[in-house]
Length: 144
Picture 1 (cartoon, rainbow, N blue to C red):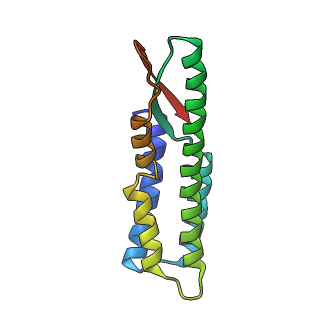
Picture 2 (cartoon, helix red, strand yellow):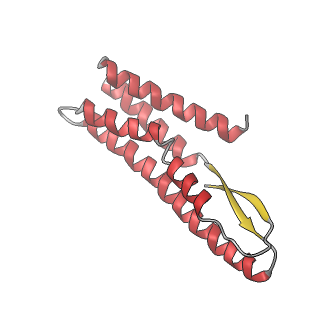
C-alpha cells in the first residue's frame, strides 16, 4: 500500500467518524467542527493519484497527450475542490442554530459513495483516451 493510498484511507476513516457521530446524534458540535476543519486542511494538502492511458509514438501524439493530461488535471482539481466545498457545507450545517443532521449526513455519504468524487473522474479517464493507429499505450499518473 502506497503513502497516497494510506492517506486516502485515513481521510476515509475520518469522514466515517464524523458520519457516525452525526448519525448517532450524540456529538459536541464544537468538537465535530474542529474535526471537520482538520479534515478540510488534510484534503487541501492531500494529493490524489489518478491513472491515465496515453500514446507516445510521434510529436503530434505528444502534443495531444499534453492537452489530454491538462484536461484531466483540470477535472481532478475540480473534483478536489468539490470535496472541500462539500465538507465546508457540512461544517456550515453543523454550525447553524438548528443543525440539519440529515442534510449533513447526505453530503457526507455522497463523498463516501463517490470515493471523494474520484470514481466518476477515473471512469471518465478510462473512456477518453488518446488513440491513433499503431499506437503504444503507456500508463501515467497524475497527482493533484
